[in-house]
Length: 223
Ligand SMILES: *Cc1c(COP(=O)(O)O)cnc(C)c1O
Image 1: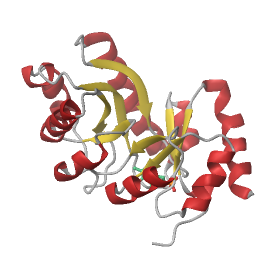
Image 2 (image 1 turned 120 degrees about the vertical axis):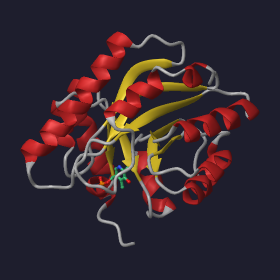
Image 3 (image 1 turned 30 degrees about the vertical axis):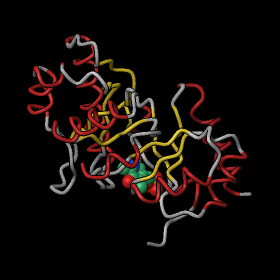
């Protein structure tokens, strides 16, 4: 029952700002997802293609699936028929492959560009220069079966809240800059995916529109 309660309290918490809750269900069994579903949760996030595909086949069809993890190009084809939103597009080559697979499936796939905002080396994503280079490229214009609907970022994993706040505010700034300066048919800045269990409050205060919450809903993960 705890899962349903957690969903409800997040919804209450997020409703004043209209922030969407993505329930990050990676590593969790079907029963846990069903409990969330019964509490009317419809947006679920996974970070592994195989697991996402298996769960999507077994669970109700009105679930909207979010791919939140690093995506390899050779795996795009498995999620292209049904994925609701791909959060972590971190290279032009990946977006090109998504476009190709979307075309094969006769659909337009919504994507977020992942921006590298953390200090850690290991995190994926465009840096600011690469981001604007790509947004101004002719290559992007030609990709008619993808739509860039916003940005995604992960802050540094630190207890320094001021640093996290700065990183999220920086991302929000980029989002606003793109919104007011880039005019392309397949770019529309609507969603800002930032915030997880440890930092969603800071993210919401910086204008997040989507929080990706795993452990605070489903409990900690045993990998
Ligand atoms: C696992 C994961 C989350 C959720 O993490 P929690 O700390 O459990 O809320 C959010 N975003 C991404 C990209 C993840 O991989």
